[in-house]
Image (cartoon, rainbow, N blue to C red):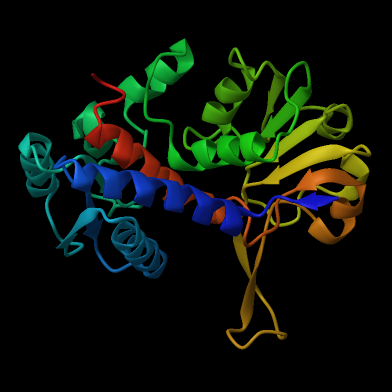
Length: 291
């Protein structure tokens, strides 16, 4: 059994990005610039955005953090997005989710210029993904594909089961795994799927992204399967100083011995997300997607 080390792989990806940024600076080319908008003071969002700002500094990016109180109007937020869209110095824009109830996430997502949508959530990027055209792939699916590639996991002709149909992970993963060059045969499952256990038992690759702690059990996995655990759930624990611990969607302790490859939680898919966001921002600075 081989653990897919997201920490180590994300460091390698960030080092590659940093090297390219350094070369751009030597050539007098533009320094990539990522802007983030944070509304309110949600603890998880604060931590995530702080990590993004830190990562930008590590690879030589410029970063801007724009903060608003929870009371900010939808109109004011959309107006700020319009200004960032027109700012030639800013290559990537992310609006940290979730947003307050009075602000439409759909309106905000669609207002971002697709060329600066480094989160890959805009309908234009999602549509281009479905068509197999150049696009910004949302960070978590992109990170998973990097892990699969860098660990040389065989995908061609393999049966892949994706559990979860969110627009952020499940649906993009089902498209990516079925694209030419990857060539897996994909089954997308969800909460209404009948016979999920039997479907999973036939899978060579399982991508669990439904947000239920330790949902995937050992009796749902065949010997030699590859397991990608996207889930992350905080549960109480009397064995940690914080009083809680993080669990994935996979019963790691019992599933891991049956696997060829498996991602741990934490330390698997998670670290790849921010590295992939940086990758998308660099692609924007280079005009690689929308030329």
